Structure formats: structure tokens, C-alpha cells
Amino acid sequence: MSTAHFGIPVSTTHTITGAIVGVGASRRLTAVRWGITRRIVFAWIATIPGAAVIGALLFHISQFWLKQL
Image: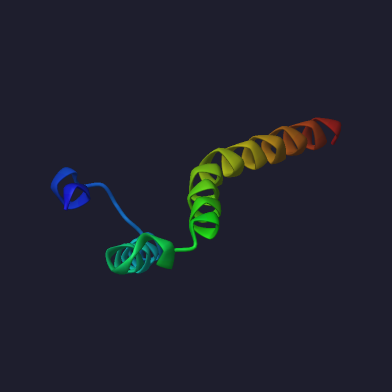
């Protein structure tokens, strides 16, 4: 597996989801619900930037609030 070779961490959720999609696709491509798969992948991609934006907003709000004290 390339992730193990390069030392890239992979969550259990990624592993299980990939295995389920892989098994479904190996039987026949129509066995996979590709719409749901796309939504899962989008959620994985959006998680890190979304968490960064929320963290930055909370940081700036707390800095503004602390300056008022």
C-alpha cells in the first residue's frame, strides 16, 4: 500500500470505507452507490479547511473579546 510506504496516516474510517467501496466495485461497478461515495470524499476533503476556518474565526473572536477586557 502506498500510504504505508510513504508513512501517510490513514484513519480507520478511510480504511473501512475504501474496503467497502473496493469490494462493491470488484463485484460490479453498479453495486457501489457512487453519489454517497462522492459525498463522503467531499466531506473528507472539506474537513481540514473547514476546521481551519472555524479555528481562525474563533481565534479572532477571542482576541477581540480579550482586548475589550
